[in-house]
Amino acid sequence: MTDSQPSYGEGTRAVHTPHPPAFEQEPLGLPVYRTASFAFSSANEFAEVLGGRAPGYSYSRVDNPTADAFATAVAALEGHGVDDDIVGQPFASGMAAISSAVMAHVGAGDHVVCAAAVYGGTWSLLANVLSRFGVTASFVEGNDPADYRAAVTDRTRLVWVETIANPTLAVADLPELAAVAHEAGALLGVDSTFATPVLCRPLEHGADMVMHSATKYLGGHGDVTGGVVVGRRDVIDPVRHLRIDLGGALSPDDAFLLHRGVSTLPLRVSRHSASAMVLAEALATHPAVARVHYPGLSSHRDHPLATKIFDAGRFGGMVSVDPHGDRDAGILLCDRLRLGMPASSLGGTRTIVSHVASTTHRQLADTDLARAGIAPSTVRISVGLEDPGDLVADFAQALDGLR
Ligand code: PLP
Picture 1 (cartoon, protein in one colour):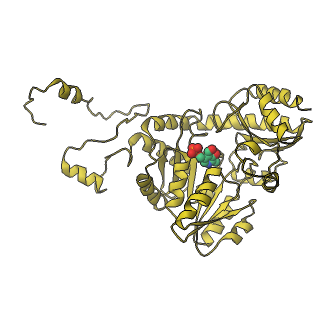
Picture 2 (tube, helix red, strand yellow; picture 1 turned 180 degrees about the vertical axis):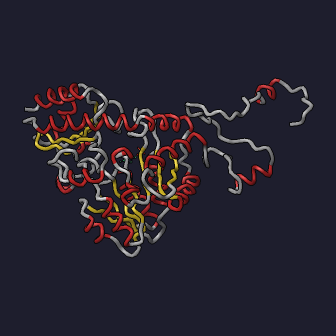
Picture 3 (cartoon, helix red, strand yellow; picture 1 turned 90 degrees about the vertical axis):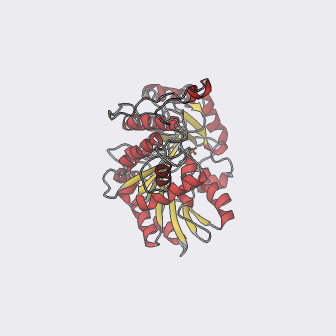
């Protein structure tokens, strides 16, 4: 624009309204940069930024300051206590994060060793999608590192596990699995959605990449979808390039909500964990219950490992319970609850339940469920932020009706 202002028409005047001047003061709240593009002072500056030779933002699918602030916040939490420079990449969903994280590090002819008890979308990405592009995968049942070592081939590039698995709440032996991956020259990628950096920081235990469905605890209110991958810069740079090419960019508005969620994460996860412990202990004493799965209980097989790799005696907000009986017992338990709501997702303010055999694991026959340590009646509970006494009473009245 030149100094002498021509007299523009009303359309031009409406479009070219002045923006507030840039100023140095830091706002306490995170600004939402709701823009697709960023303007440059010259064509040359545009070319320099786009070419990566100068710092700056060009286009929000590539980078956006609000989305970056969210990923940087998670990288700071996950990187605490780690000497390397830990960086993060924001995504529109957990699955967008997983697909970029995995595909950034494997190509045709490569092999992935993956826990059998992973999120169904991860399993499907490997078994149904990447298999069409020449990537093979072995799925390991249970969490014995020796079984992972046995599954490794000379083409293994990635080992993928979840810190806490769904719905048995088995805990991954991250230091041992990192050793297995690194001996093979592969990376260890960890989906730490259930654990959050409040319970456990996998990078401290040797993992190379940590991924979250931010839809869950990071957002924490059940009102946004998002994902994030963090790790060393050399591991994350290829993930960033794939994010740009595949297009799963996090929107600035959703990034704002997720960034705000991160600021209350320790408070919420502490409360989820304390309430889950109270509920798990109460469920374990109810005569209608055959088994409770919660890594905070000394009866859980992985309690010693969880005590070792989780922080400050917190074991998370996820609990699974097997009422006596078959599938109908689990379904009836869900239906009888007044506070617990049958719904997808987890990690929000409200207690959510799912009957595992008819929802998340509906493709599995009873024999396959048994091999995976899941009973026909298993109900997965995402313990919300209600008063724990109210939750215990609600589950007690629901279980009383099963006898
Ligand atoms: N990982 C885990 C452990 C999950 O539970 C989920 C979703 O339920 C995902 C990944 C996928 O995340 P999103 O639904 O945000 O794509």
